[in-house]
Length: 251
Length: 351
Ligand SMILES: Nc1ncnc2c1ncn2[C@@H]1O[C@H](COP(=O)(O)OP(=O)(O)OP(=O)(O)O)[C@@H](O)[C@H]1O
Ligand SMILES: [Mg+2]
Image (cartoon, rainbow over all chains, first blue to last red; front, side):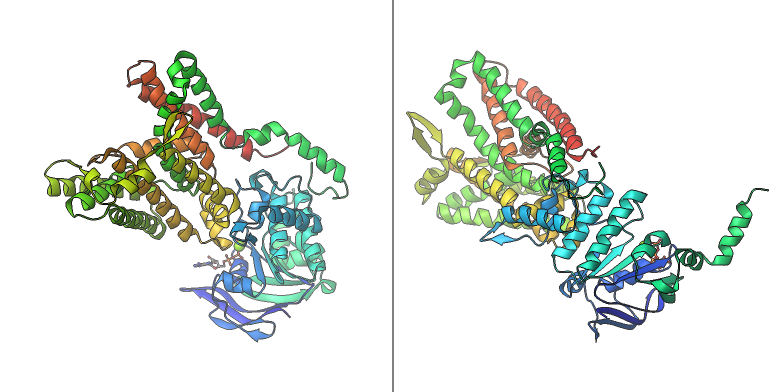
């Protein structure tokens, strides 16, 4: 396990956002974290990425207990996070965004030629088909933008890639594109933590599934043990869904 | 075209680049509007006034372009970084007043007096930057505050020391000749004497362009102006970048203040008031967006040329100088409209 939690918990004042959650992810594996709105998914990954510090339980990186003091600390340990809002500057070109904050240097200067070349190569290696690395990121589609963010994290040596609902704002086709890049990152040996509340996005790509409900873990399932239908039913509470179907049925 | 198509089709990818088109590539260069504007303004005045297009005439209108241009370039960097500095104009006055007062009333060497002016200017820039980054208040308000305070200090201190609203007599001070040659002298080019300030302006523009396009700091400037939160999230030192930008503007104000003080050997206590908007206008004409994250140093320099040409051209044509204000407004309006189109082009969602 590269990254592991044991009975981790977090409270905001009187709100228990997360209670006793245990999970782990190994290299070359995709862990999907599923849960309804407010289940604590974002809180969990913010602990994993150093934005929040946990109050109870233990966080382990490479089997060693740590406290991540900041996002920078997490990054230095190879834990990269692609947030819902992406951290990209729309008016800046793809290559400028790609290296933002970690620009390659040549003497005093920003090695522009190398940045362009490497950005193009890295995107191609991930199978991302960008027409022109000089175009502003604002002109890319949502899926392309997610893909660039993923490629960036991979290039900068991430061992663990955390994605917070990368597919939630995307159409079916675009979501498929992003799922493909998740699979490719996995194939390159990264551990991927993929947060979503869509079981149909999670099931095809996930190796294991962690279900959260009202801040508590409801168990981890291996892919062999569960179908997409069962995932859906578990997430929403099967009985509730049947009741809904009943309610919505035509008389 | 869906991005999901297999990357095997290299040829298709090339076709798509071609469709973006050279025309659009050029159009989204921020300085395009300024270049077109400068050519038109030059043609307009040159056609009617032989003096305007003579070497002496060119030297004449390049001079105001140079002092304004140094400021406009610095202000453009700051605007690309997403901030304004309304205190920049008055700070040229403050720097000049410190220089002349220390050199003439306190017997300091001109070089030392300039150094003192630089220290104060950089401190003001640092304070502006620190307040803006710490409080997250709009820089428009923060620097409006410093603008008013400096305006008060300039007048109050000058009156207290000299009893009038100006200080003069710099020519007799120690070290005047050297400093004056370096900053306020002239150089001969083919029998026409050009102000040395023009060289400073070209140097400032070249350095600013290099920083913007070819340094890490340039990448950070675009980023903090484009989306500060996102920039921070990927590790850009946003606060440091912004403070450095405010200090750069202050440095430019000191340079221009010193150039003008050495040239005229006296400084009015109310100098520079109202100039801050002209800097911003020149930067906007040069392609800077008011919302930040986009613009160019060369564009701002060309924006300053347009002003220099109009400022002197109107005089050469024998028009009333009041027309300059009309011109100012018209240029600003045209430039903002052009920039809006450019931005829409640049951000246009494809398909
Ligand atoms: N900074 C905070 N202060 C107080 N309460 C918080 C804070 N962050 C999260 N919470 C609370 O913790 C709970 C879990 O929130 P979280 O954002 O982790 O949910 P989520 O699973 O990501 O939901 P969504 O699917 O809507 O993104 C919610 O009840 C939320 O209101
Ligand atoms: Mg969330």
